[in-house]
Image (cartoon, rainbow, N blue to C red; front, side, top):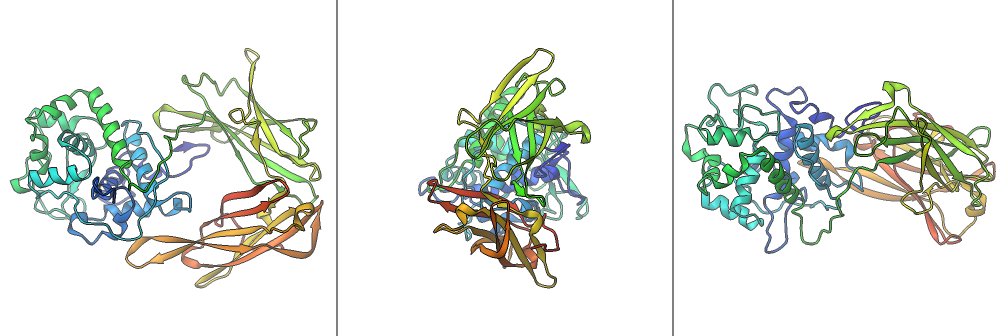
Length: 507
């Protein structure tokens, strides 16, 4: 989701496609795709090493990785780096977002990449490389000649060459503003780079440059007598082949890495805030339901009622329904790529803390027809809610000035669990700076929560955990977990943010 009532921010820097963060000559979408290619292209298919593993972070001093594009790309990922979202996963996702923002193909995304901790071997193709050398580079990475031509053509559908990086390839003065485009539609993912080449109308500096040694696109495109380029001149074929080659590019990972199945958009998804105790001792349960409404889902957000049917801690449904109301801000709608529209419904209910809540179903009703159906989390019995271990965000805080920050986190634990053999733990992701590398290393520290003497409410015992953060990386994420031997399971609250905490402690 890139705009509207709620947006998640990752695609902000590529929306619109021409977005350059206010930097002259910069087009983020093209830089994101280029960064992923440079990171992937040192893969060795024979040994199963390299590939999309974020080793590029350690390789920016090499001549093959000239320019500010790569650090610009990594800077965009700062806020999204967590223990569950690696830099290499974010690089893959950036290709998906960049292509989508430029009216390009929908590229399947799989997660699970693991970041390298050091530089890999050199070997990214350079403009001055001869054709056979470039062929061997692609072959080593598992791509044949047709793949090579397709990947370069698709990658050069967007963007430009900067005179500050390649002054010998861009006519005129050397400046940030002076750039040379690959085709006449540099902010639209289309096959103009192909058709203009075939019609001898191209201004692509890698085809018609004065120094023929640097005309790598010319050598690559014509390496099979233009057979591949001719097939790519059909827009449907171009889109289909770009989808597949970019999918293969971002899925080229070390042999030791296993990726998930492709992730897809969930039509109806709840976003539930962690329940917490209120000052009156009741339990606050609130959040939002996001509904995708378009021709594909058959759901009309303007003709829809949403409610929640929940079970208490003992499994009883006698507590009644919770009505979710359509959000008012910006019409309660968000907008995403590929023509997706989402409608949001908000809910908030105070619940008796002694009975709590264990899970809920979502009920959707179309008033105009009376049609209704129930969503129970893909036949799993409902969407689970933990009302035994409560994160008290309003009682937690980040304080301090100077080089460090003091973190104080408060939870409330049901007294029946508080006296057990296990204790709740804070898992805090420290952002540790690395010399010469823009993005930090994440180092997870586990800290026990300790009881706050004398502080109890509504059958819950309060606990607190304290930690110290470096000021440069105080905005980070943390998890709260506790093993529960009585239930044979585990309590877990994940990816909570320090950035939303108050600067004043109340406990």
